[in-house]
Amino acid sequence: MRRLRKANLRWMFRETRLSPENLITPIFVDENIKEKKPIESMPDYFRIPLEMVEKEVEECLEKGLKSFILFGIPSYKDEIGSSAFDENGVIQKAVSRIKDEFPDVVIITDVCLCEYTTHGHCGVVRDGEIVNDETLPIIGKTAVSHAESGADIVAPSGMMDGMVKAIREALDEAGFESVPIMSYSAKYASNFYSPFRDAAESGFKFGDRRGYQMDIHNAREAMREIELDIREGADIIMVKPALPYLDIIRMARECFNLPIAAYNVSGEYSMVKAAIMQGWLSNEAIYEILVSIKRAGADLIITYHSKEIVEKLQ
Ligand code: PBG
Image (cartoon, helix red, strand yellow):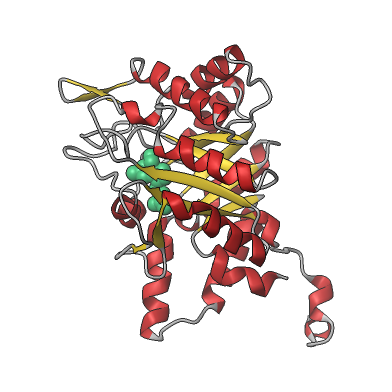
């Protein structure tokens, strides 16, 4: 076996190649700040003020990163998350600023209510319960308002049943038949989202998300979730988190022909960064993890590591 492992040969026999085109960079846009603000639980990652969002995109473009997923931290929250679909909301403004300056970049918007509700849940709350069907028109409206401001792809992440269908119908009715949906289809109720909740101010005030996100013990159920999303009109499916769920990515790759995105989430980022800061791992570990996600079967990887790893990929 060692014949093909010689230093000058081994690159020829690589079965998996990771390229900048595979990476999607998350941007946290905060309407309440004027300077970049470090996120304590995510070393080297920042919240970006609305006024600096084009600059952030420009920096990434210079490094060869061309697609982004946006999360908003609004100045106003209420019970139903109405700033999520406000035409002057933080995401709507951020998308149009970016698209005005860089019409060719790919802007994906996260469609969810948790950053916009006072209780921090991903749906409307009634009597302490997160109610499914009342949430659907609100996320439909949110997706349409993102499309109106210029979003290229909308990405519902709230794990409400029927969300893809509701969004597809709302988009079509508003004349956005050509806007694709990237659905967070198999999203587990994971501890690995903890740093994100700091970053996006989306921590919940009571309970947890186990009533709507998937049980971490289940794999077949993930295939059902994905199948339903495809039937409802998803164009791209997602598995989230990535590293602890490589088996699910692989299973999805074998069962479905749609493009698969994997979300290398905040906790995956923070644990590796923590070990690197201690000197226990090096940046090579980041590369190895991202390659493993691609090798498992993901076409696209949403990752906070994109800026620090992209140079290695060119
Ligand atoms: C919002 C959302 C979450 C993440 C992406 N979209 C948090 C959650 O569901 O609690 C997590 C991303 C990450 O941890 O990097 N619904």
